[in-house]
Length: 154
Image (cartoon, rainbow, N blue to C red; front, side, top):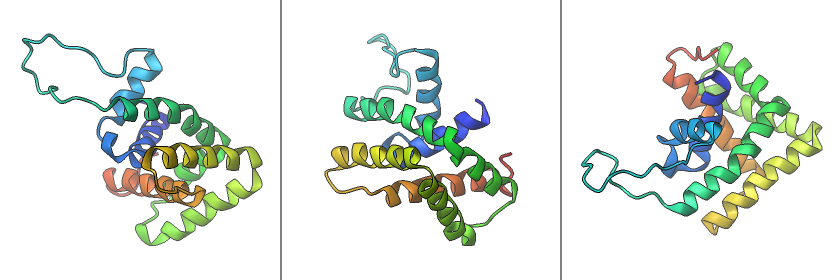
């Protein structure tokens, strides 16, 4: 999985917590054009016996292009810079401020973040704001750095 895919999967997992652990596999399958969830034989007693909510899968599929778009419009560079600088959790506010500044400079990026918020609002039934999406991106970034020890994902 490429670094961009790792970051995208982490953000998607933060936006849809129920799919947090499955996000990397789902993203890879989506990129290959494979079905997100495979079917298994009724006699297969593997560990994948749970059902997956089709609404969550549809939300995942609808969010992928938006997450890819925001990464392409500068968010990826901000995240990579934050990770390579070895920022710690106390710099969370700085990361959020940097992301918000980037969004304020780019109207299309703002529209895309707001679209992500709309999709999540529809699913959750509670209002999700663009600020909430930015917070989720910051949380995903923090967890990426946390996972890689000394924040050395790049």
